[in-house]
Length: 464
Ligand SMILES: Cc1ncc(COP(=O)(O)O)c(C=O)c1O
Image (cartoon, helix red, strand yellow):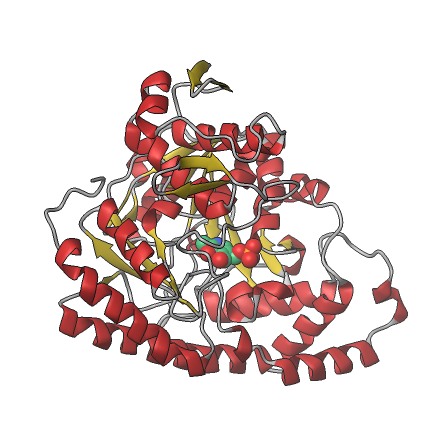
């Protein structure tokens, strides 16, 4: 626990020695949300707060940066960091923040597929056909784990497309991966787990979900072979993105997969974009190595659209009851029926094949456009985003700001970092713009990188 008095501000923050960055973020968010810090309040300078709390100045700077990006704080040159004026009742993105799409004509942030490519016609046709054929009973409360027809179709699809070992009875349908993670966190707690190891780079929103349910987080370093199994310590469970690490883009090497499975405990496999591999056949799901220990998670958020709000978990029998009890209400039966019909009619596979080709071309164009600048993305040819290494976090922030001035939203790695920073770079979501806007977005990105390249290619000191 620490208290600090700065700028006449009594800022009481409840911090323990570990997970300082996440805790500081949460403590500041809570203070703003609850009204303890009101709009316009000036926060202490990063140096002052870091000294008061006994943490690295960089940690405080990263926390401020994250909260600016989320809209809780605003940072103006010469005025310092202030509590934003529009924070109540819910966090609003700050339109001035780099990375926010609000005032940007072009958007290369990761996270969303090309929404204009959603298969509206096939979806509507599937909805009509499925509803016409469905018995009335489907419209009742039904099984909270999901409609049997969708679970059956998914068991077959996941075995065929991702090599998952699944029976319909092990599948649970939920409203997106984040919802699934909430359910799994509660199930893990219920069955005695206390700590979840997570990759050092990933979504803050996912970490927040886990912490809100009461699990402690343990950061896992990520290197060229993916997450480091030997760093998992005595964590009860591990959350991984084995097929395509988010956001660094590496794949989890076979020896690491084996090591994670062999260490015991539960592994949550987030296979968010596993269908999208461009240089060869997708690597099968890790779940097949140990179906009794690995929970497989898939989602329609990349393959179709996040607004569909459908995801699926394949859960080992020993956790199934605890997960079912934590479920609450599931997604709409109508949407489940539609997805089942889309998959069984072949429409889902066709959509994936179309999207795979389109995104592969976009990635190729990105790689080709960066080459004359002497820049190369890292990670495998897969997914909906690529990672461009920078030598320093400072260069990454400069590139974000410069892009923002050119009407382009991009995001730096600091937005995804948990714990100590050992890499820097841009996470480029090449799938997001509609097809007609991609050429201009790419040209903007190259212009920004060309003008900031002199400063980007500097001595390698990621946290500078
Ligand atoms: C790493 C990762 N996992 C999972 C998801 C999907 O989340 P959801 O199904 O909640 O939309 C995403 C989407 O951006 C992601 O980036």
